[in-house]
Image (cartoon, rainbow, N blue to C red; front, side, top):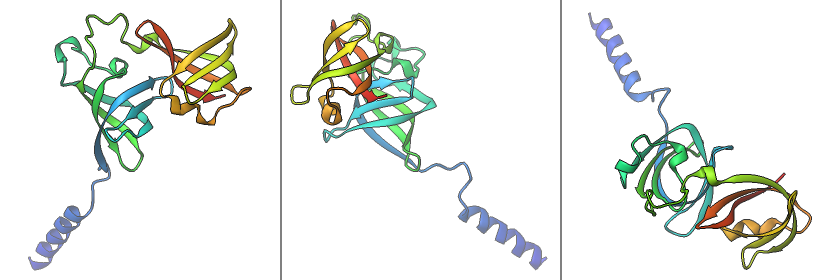
Length: 184
């Protein structure tokens, strides 16, 4: 009987000490959304200390709305747009966001012309001029030259005339704004 008790006790201790295989090292943060790119499952955010970072988002990340919940009855990733203030949970090992809770929407959804990311588009371009201090970039698009405001402007630090880029263009009010820029 004692050997059976010892074996059972050893199994209980092993089960209590060993971490489950599915356990994740989850961490919580909060930030304002600056831009989203669901084509590559990324969201750029600014935390309360003013630090900007682009995060990878898990395809099946959950979304909840604490603010204006009734206006987002079936919340999904595509509902997440600037300037929402979110609390988010990420896996500290993979740095991948697994859940969002929108604490402040930041606009009146019923009055917004197009708050959704459907307004965002991607364009291939060649940079013709950059003013990183002001946060503007002039590019050659297939349709001709155009100047855009880039928000956040810090994205322009590593770009110069002649760079071939992909622009993610969204709306800020009635103006087009580059929300993400990357080399191609």
